[in-house]
Amino acid sequence: MMELKIENLHSKVNKKELLKGINLKVSQGEIHAIMGPNGSGKSTLSNVIMGNPKYKISKGKISFDNKNLAELSPDEIAKLGLFLSFQYPFEIQGLSFSKFLHAAYKNQHPLETMSIMKFRKLLVETAHKLEIESDFIDRELNVSFSGGEKKRAEILQMLVLKPKIAILDETDSGLDIDSLKLVSEAVNDCRSKDFGAIVITHYKRILNHLKPDFVHVMYDGKIIKSGGVELAEELEEKGYSEILKKAGVNILEVKTDE
Image (tube, rainbow, N blue to C red; front, side, top):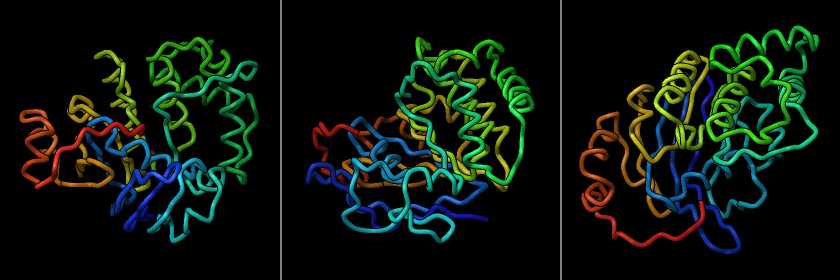
């Protein structure tokens, strides 16, 4: 069983410290939810894990499968089996969704030989689970996709690539009730001893379907409280202010971009 281990992680952007001592362990077989108000550092954490060069590690360590991620490129990190669904997926004109995903699949599974036709069959079958039409896979990557289509496309990528640990950054944002259920069911279908996930969200509603093993509250670049799903229920009932006060945190107006 592989483990993503984050130890006393500090990170800066343009000399401004955004993460201020994160400690977190995520093993395959576990679902962790990270909640927190805007600017608390949730998306920054996901970008640092995946090696985004914009974010510099100033202190601490991130390791996966006993490999120091700070020494690896984003491509090498993905090859280890880590996956990030973007909060705002990028658009690429002239590149179809199917060709993009086939290239990503070959990159992450270099020893597995799969013809393009067999891959397309896998892609179409998996797309149907998310109620995505077959012709969707031939559209340009994220170009003119609706918000819901972009979210489903990200989950489709996860289902096909089969990562060891997936980081889902506000995958529930902008989804209607039916789409939220579909996406949640897809993540639940992945749950096994070989799959773990970090679910970043503002709201409890996706957690009603996912039932995380652990819930963490972030604020001002730190994890200030951890617990089970009951912590998310407490947040829903009392809001962040009450939780932060109980944790002895001085509430600031956080304006940092995540």
